[in-house]
Amino acid sequence: MRKKDLFRFKNEMILANFLANFIAVFFVGTLIAIAELASLDDIHPFISTFDMLFTPFAFIGIGVLTLLYEKPVRQCIPALLDQKPVDPDLLHTAQRRILNEPYVLMLMDLCVWSLAVVLYPTMFWVFDSGTDYIHRALYISISIGCITVIVAFFLLEHLLQKRYAPLFFPDGGMDRVPGTLRIKIRTRLGALLFASNLVPLFSILDLVFRMTAKDDQPAEAIKQLQVAVTVNTLIFLAVGVILTVLVSRNLTAPLKEIVRALKNIKKGNFDSRVRVMSNDEIGYTGEIINEMTEGLKERDHLRESLKLAMEVQQNLMPKTDPVVDGIEIAGTSIYCEQTGGDYYDYIVKGTHGRGKIGVLVGDVSGHGIPSALLMISGRAFLRQRATMAGDLAQIVSDVNKEICRDVEASGRFMTLFFCEIDRMEKSITWVNAGHEPAFIYHPDLDSFEELKGGGLPLGVFEDTRYRKQVTPLAKGRIVIIGTDGIWECRNPDGEMYGKQRFKEIIRELSPTSASHMISQVIRSLEAFRGSAGREDDITLVIAKIMV
Image 1 (tube, rainbow, N blue to C red):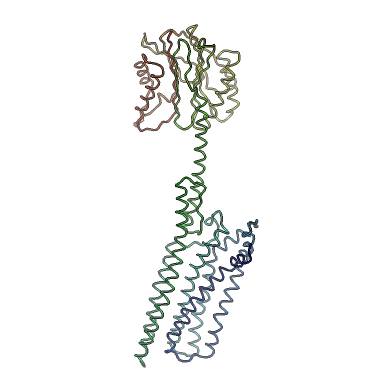
Image 2 (tube, rainbow, N blue to C red):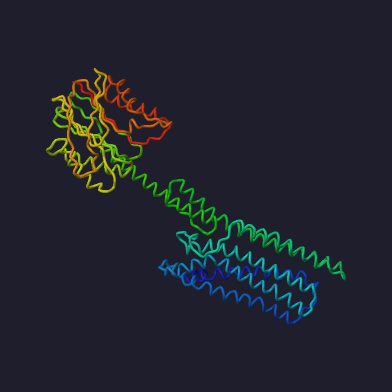
């Protein structure tokens, strides 16, 4: 840390306030006095002495009070410049004071020049100097006070935004500091209007009334008035330009920073942040944008996580339909979100497509990541247990125990329909754990048979014992296993697709292949749903017995 930087940071505020006072005293107190000097007689020596001492003592008084006020700020600056830790209480006090400093110094200036407004006219009145002296002293003191206060505020605010806000608030949060004053943008613009228009107007009106009131030398008074009006115009024009530049920078700099950050966010750079420079409406907007960006960043991270979860879950689904002699089988699963709780799988027993094939269709309560995790756990338990000895009922009962330990009191559960098609025995064995009944369509009889079961969903009670059921399965029969997302699909009017409509399309498509049947059912569902959102996952497996 260089001594030059430390000195500048410690003294910029106080020097800026001195500069504001100097501008007002020089332009108003000196130039206007010169412009009106010809119209003034000698001033009483006491008043002259007081005038010479007032300004220096005013500057000294303001300086001492400023140093006392800035003590916590000055204590924090070296550590902040060196990026060293600062006592939290001290830093909190310094942050509050640096935010309030433009207002505090403005109040000091106002008090000093309000005192001048009282003292100078009073002294001219005490020494019987005449109304012209009194009016002139009143006019100059008010003008100096108004210009000082307004120039000081905007100059100090400019320094606060450019220099001190990045140092004391590197991560923003200016609007969350309690005990701070906030001036709205419209108040700033009103102050600019007052300083650039109303003060000059009233000053010129005062000159006209005071100087034209002299009846003894009207020609000389008019000449002096011309000079005084010209000087006043130039002074207030210069002050107006200075204030306009300061106000425009104070307003445009934060807006440019917001635009910069928004452009980066638009490009997908969610690490971009608005450097908050003020605690007004613009600063608050910057804070909200930063909070919004954090939300977008989390959302983007969640989206990537969901994308990865979706890829993992899709990889766990059967990539191809199995080839089994005498059975044509196909399946699909469509999620209403990026991840879901529906699940289907095949377990082929035997070699070269001869033997039994197990078909599993599950539906986890809810949607999204939690359901996907339970689905993955259930799949792992089922696959592992299916490799061991035991019939379907024993397998499902054992898996239920494991799932119960996983979900515990979460309230989540999983329905399951687990069947085993034995081509050699021409039968289907199944266990239904709280799932929607599967169907067997008999094309020769044009009838549907439901494969029901009274078992509870997996994950409800650990000691639940499931039982298997068996039914014959002749050539030409079609086994349909689905989830409730099919018949509970709704159109924009709220009407459900329904099992009856589902059975009609199965009946109509029964002569076609299993994969074609599934694709046409999905197409029918999408056409029925129309513009309505997908409310539930959809899973469908169809097995046609060919021999």
